[in-house]
Length: 547
Image (cartoon, rainbow, N blue to C red; front, side):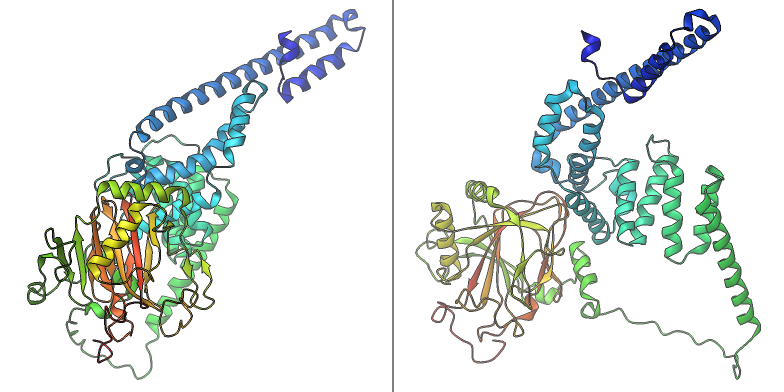
């Protein structure tokens, strides 16, 4: 009965059919010579059968090793899910496992004895990350690498600041990052990650990726960056491993030709001085003064601030920043229990309120928001349509005051502290940043070239921003203001506040700000955008444009 239920592999069935065709010749017993042929056929069948058994045993052993590894990993991860996924390599590897490796496992174990597993996997797979998720997580690692000036080896070995769950990348992981970079014609990162994959192979790490494949990508990415000599060196290394590699053979000839051509051009230029050229004593270069921070491109300033390398306040300006107990002109709520207020920056004026939201309130807000988190959008400045963007990597949800007393209480608290009307403010937005989560430099208010930015709300422009920090972030995740060099670091239970508009109603362009990529940790924030309508008597119009 067992043999009737077994499904044999294709090669085994082919061999059986061959045996049956041989036995169809009824006169085999009449010839020992022909019968000896049958013996060799049977021997081949036994060999194939043993190969099949070994393959099945190997398959089961591979599945067992995979299960043991994942059992240990998930046991550790589920003890502290947010902390574990706060390490960007862990988050990337989770995306990669669920999108790619579980699919490979599915192919491996697909058989009639695994119907239950396959059915379950097939059902669950609809909820798995997609190719877009895996690519997004990979690009997040590249973004972190650039923003925080991390070398590939630091990321691969998991030596990131403050990590609790250190995770190392395999050759396959590094190769995957290199391939994703290559598909985007990003040859700089292709080189970095293929070089890291090669380094780990040279150190003896076992991998399904071979050196020839890695060297092929590596040499081409180096060539694309204009370094023909280095590209030739790596191509020659490739040929040492695979002398018959046709593309490498052709590349060697091409690289040698290009190098010879460059050499000849350099010699001709050296032998043929320009007419009227006079030898002049080289003048000493004037020592250029240090670049003003304001002249540095915004992208570079943003990254510098994210690394904590931004502009430092002069001692005179810093001496004007204070900490104080604040009661908002003896507001009844805070006369007996004033709140702690701390100046973060002077122009624009940014203040932080300490111990302004409790852990219980934070957990309630997260509980309400989690089921509704969706990919955060931005308003297209031309069409006004909400859309996702690569420069805003987070998910958000909106909470109204009537949903829970905690939200209403928080809205009342913001109104009492700022003195601004909350009825015309937007709902409380809760955001959680993803792998390398960020929001690149932007304005909260609508500019003059965006007259319809908040037209559908009917409440005017965004006069001010209130931002709660609902988690500590181990590394990265600062709120930075590139134009002025300010950086505000997340601290759980605090909130920062600033005006986006001057009292005149004109936009304060120095409030252009950004959320730095989260390097290690999990960043939760919630914010309240306060609008102009209803503030006429609470914040009277100024007498000049920038008052």
